[in-house]
Figure 1 (spheres, rainbow, N blue to C red):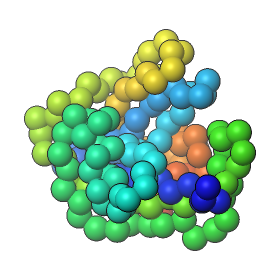
Figure 2: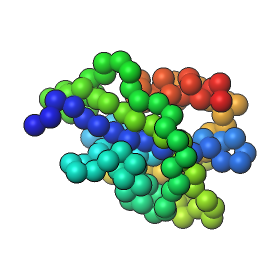
Figure 3: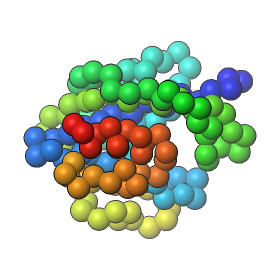
Amino acid sequence: MSPFTLRVYGIHINSSRQLLLTDEYRLETYMTKFPGGGMEPGEGPIDCLRRECREELGMEITVLDHFYTTDFYQPTRLLPKPKQLISIYYRIDIQPPYKFSLTGKKFDFPPIEGQQTFRWLSLDHLDPEEFTFSIDRVVGQMLKSV
């Protein structure tokens, strides 16, 4: 069993300078993060991101470029036996019309395992504390200067 957990996320900013976020309820935890998820054995990071976006968004994406990879030690937070977490972020493009449901309200669902919604957040009003996880907060801070 690997001592690492690898996760891959997509950063999509629309033409109105709004960032796509996902609100989820998993492992009895409300979380706000970027679309994406865990890399499976035999999968590369970009293949993982494309699969995760097909699963979560129901859409194909275009990967534009690498944005950031975790460059500090971060233990996993929600696993029973913590591992070292490595998160990889890519800027992505998603062409409208969007097939996923959007809401204007954070956590617009009941606390049922696996619930998920998507929403836009203006880059002009981005507060890195909006994100649940510390690595996402680092990326949020980086996006404030974009």
